[in-house]
Amino acid sequence: MLLIGILTLQFATLALVVVLYRRIRRKQFDSEDRVVEQLNTVYTQLEALLALRGALALNDPLPATRGWAASPDFLVHLVREARTRQPQVIVECSSGTSTVVLARMVQANGHGHVYSLEHDALYAAKTRQALVSHGLDAFATVIDAPLRSHRIGSSTWMWYDTSALPRDIDMLVIDGPPATTQALARYPAVPLLRSTMSAACLIVLDDAARPDEQAAVARWIADDGVELHTGYYAEKGIAVLAPRTVAVG
Image (cartoon, rainbow, N blue to C red; front, side, top):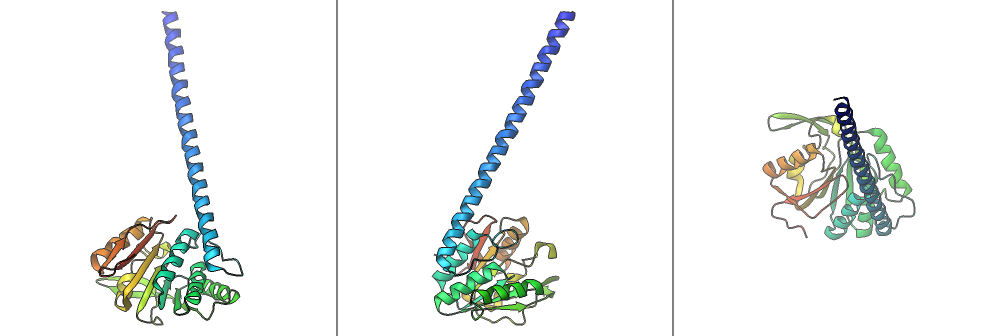
């Protein structure tokens, strides 16, 4: 009986060791997969950044493209759409690196202007300085637009003051306000500006992989007469929409 007990204990110990070994190996493989995924992401962003630098041909380096800023792959989409569509009026929700990129495209196109809504005075000042340092301040206006109450249907939302915006918007880039402002923080952009959009307006949303942004897109499609176009990819997610009558090439 003692021998059987010892053998049973040994088998149980061996089984436990095998289970633990498999779990460790699984975690190791999972960790390796995450490392490979992260390396692929870094490579993709570096590739996009190099393409961006070539397309923009700026004398000075771009502001940061990590953290809160738009990622290089998202900015490449903006460059491509601005070059293809030649928008006259570009409105941007939140200023920063993308403001410099869009202003450079306006300069390269030879027409148009960027209007960037910014609720944070410090960020507005930094963006204006970046535009000046790149010689692009004539092509973009950073608008001090504090968040204020807006009525949409039966609900009240905090969103940018839009009183200084022009009409006939040809391209709307949505990258603010911050998600910490409120739930569905970026949702008000389309219902508030839909009546000021041109018939060919293109709507480009950053961070579209997040649940709040996905919910906002679903509401825009259901309520605001726009449709989502596929075939676009960006690290943090991108949604490209337009009025239902407009084809996106």
